[in-house]
Image 1 (cartoon, rainbow, N blue to C red):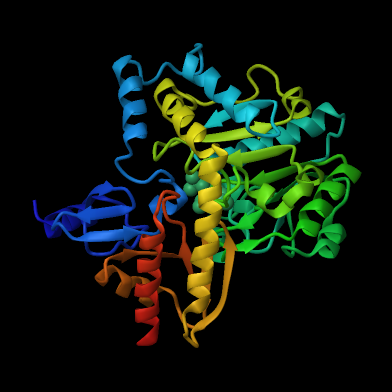
Image 2: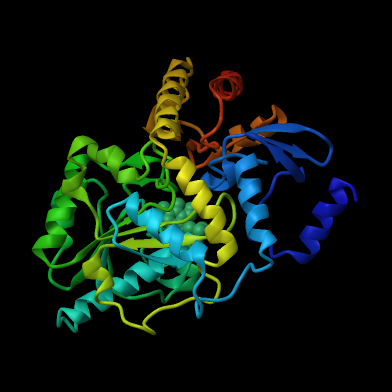
Length: 401
Ligand SMILES: Cc1ncc(COP(=O)(O)O)c(C=O)c1O
């Protein structure tokens, strides 16, 4: 089949909710993808911040083979398996959490977090404490609850009514958060670094203030780290990057993770403290697939590698270098460069989409974050030379835009 045949077949049979470029990806190696015609693309998207260890990684492949060799990919959550238990132990040992609940995606993790927060409020005797406080620019997913907390009319309006009871305050504006908060709020949800909204890190004062606000109203603080978590910012958890040495004063009650967890296999996780876990009882929540032995075994390998302090230090160093190189581009189109680790945005005074389309022709894959922000979320294993090459291509395109 030629790439045209594949694209036509897809257009005939696959729901058209995405516009895709006109090449067909066939294989990958490190931070490079190859299409069916043999063209190479340096990948600064990594499956939207998923493929942290890149493509065809020997360790991930080995973990996959080990899991496959058991002949059991799935048993459901009705039964015990070792990978399920071992991964939860690792996630708890590497975080603030005491307990983990698995799911299959980022949106599902946030749905679960909302349910846990309402359950917690009920356990405290608050029958009407149902609301969620979320923020402008947030993206929490496409399901009815997570979408309700994602204030974008284009995504929300065609599907109303969504989950009721979500309030919004301005991101990084503690005064506004205080104004929207009362005892009817069971949880505050925030991305420590907003991803889809344009790569905006929260300020330490904001996260600390939200922690205090949640405590004042006996509400839970949820960090959505689906995009900024699991090493992306150069610390294992995104809020640790924001918090510096005072991270303990901004520790959440619940943290949702997904994208990179299982090296490209679908997996999400809800990390929580014991007091949240104590509010959940047998039968309260569940999933057929979540935390199966195959994904959990691979995730154990991935999280173990990423949590290595030496590995995280390389991510931080590459992030600093990437921002420096982007700041050195001499283009009037660049309004700002921001982000943490390898979650970096370049805000332009023009639309990002035409730049991204031209980058394909130069062998570079980029994605936007909002209409005019170019987003860099490459594999965490990308090399300095590859990052320099990506920046050169962007500079070249901008110089003739
Ligand atoms: C911060 C954040 N939360 C939630 C989601 C939703 O994750 P998923 O697409 O796996 O449902 C995303 C996806 O981009 C995200 O960036």
